[in-house]
Image 1: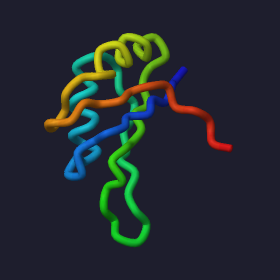
Image 2 (image 1 turned 135 degrees about the vertical axis):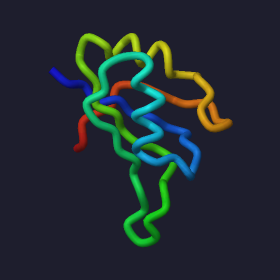
Image 3 (image 1 turned 180 degrees about the vertical axis):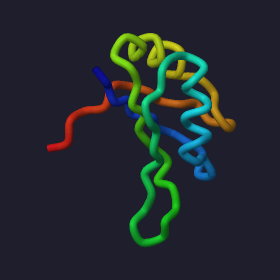
Image 4 (image 1 turned 60 degrees about the vertical axis):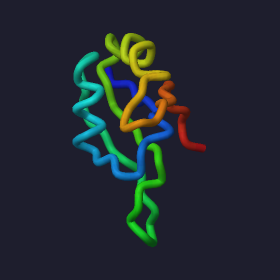
Length: 82
């Protein structure tokens, strides 16, 4: 099973590959994506990482509050869209 994690406070220059590389150190990563503005294509400063169910808590504990690109990340389980 796969769980989706929200990753906030990302540097504007972060690419999906950078996000995946940072999280791979802590567990199995299925995919990662940076959310961008529809009009400008610029990063909105947050993204999502899909991880294996068994690694989710370990990854949240390791990456929440960790420094990445000079910023302190906020990592939590993503809430379902309404």
